[in-house]
Image (cartoon, rainbow, N blue to C red):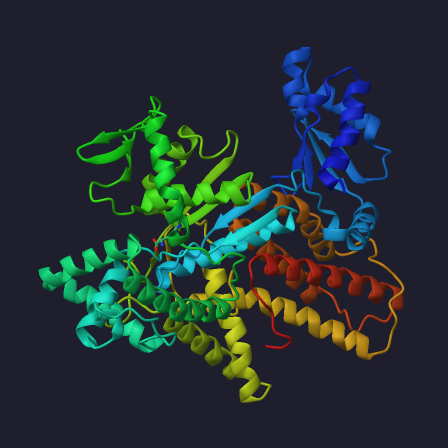
Length: 587
Ligand code: ARG
């Protein structure tokens, strides 16, 4: 479906051409003076210079020819040469009724059917998930859903950090704790046990202990490094322990991501890319792209237009150890082989910017990706505490994700308890859904690249631009609709032309759906959807406070209201789904 702006623009184009002006001046936008009009066309101002006429003469001429069009309630030319437009309520309600009937509320993607890989989550196996990984999961899930909604074949990959030093640290710590395990018996030649030698709680405790130990104990650090290298070169016992670590850790991560309502199509990791590394690096050397420098193998990536000097990308260290960039490049080799995506989107802390610049440029230079493939790094900012420093627990440690979620659920539960009308049990369930929404919305409503302050009281508030406020609005609509249903009336009418200003404001917010989706998609910006649902929610609440919906005596009028708020609910529900936020039935 064309947007309303496109429909109005089409009419303007016709008239501009009829009057002998180029159609390029027929540009219509949403008014920046909503107190004066709803839409505006400033084309006469620009055309005046070219056609050497006073702008208001052109504006008058255009308006004269458009006055009779039924799509406008009012169209006027205003000196020095603006055209102000107010659209007709009937045109608007017809449009809304059409949106209601059309798939995706009339949204048509201009570039569907691409294959897109979204690399997000990025948890490190065997290390506890902390709030640093929260943003990647939350923003990435939304970017993935938006891409899928517009019609792209979208593949989400968790890309686990599963090949690094943490593995050697865990292996060596395990050796110190349980030296009798068969994995550490050099003379053992049988099958290794299928039962893991640790539980998830032990594993969670082993890594921080080992990491701390390596900082004090040089010998231990060296052993961990050697074990990592042994694992990376295929040692049998290290590989057996690694598999246990991966199984136990993945099961736990899945649970954590499930709790966040985040799900991946692929559970690949850095380890999956390793088989591609030798050939990839050899080819780069053979092609003259990579060369030896101080024992390492590097690729120059600097470009003349760079404002500062960028260091080369190291693809192999002197000891042969796998590097972060090498893994990412080899992962691209695999993805090209398996999926041939048209676009790659990576989510990670914005401090990884240089890493991704190096990887993208090397991938292009070495021909690992086809030319024209779009590679985007979506770097996000830090979640800070109220003190403006990276968020910590009260005791100063790194906050575990599940504790953070617990805290916010409790804050929401307290709010619900203030005037609870459901059982305590239901309130607790609801608090979990709303708490997660509070957390996600608090994050997603900020532009991803910005740092933001995690403010539990603000996020959990039922007022203002918050997750609970949006959900409360949807719940309010659901409750009106179920009361209407209970009254046994059968709605055979659609949305009526708006009478009240608040009704028109709500209608005007609903018609923006397509544009919002398009720009959130193009700019990979979930916060645009948050801005939009906040606008729609405010518009709905304005309408609700002005209108007696359930007490309206005129059946057709009431049915029109019901149709309007049904569309409002459907649009809000679609939007929160794109943010991976769910809504309870009651709050
Ligand atoms: N595991 C990394 C980290 O914790 C994030 C991975 C981001 N994705 C990537 N393809 N490099 O920082």
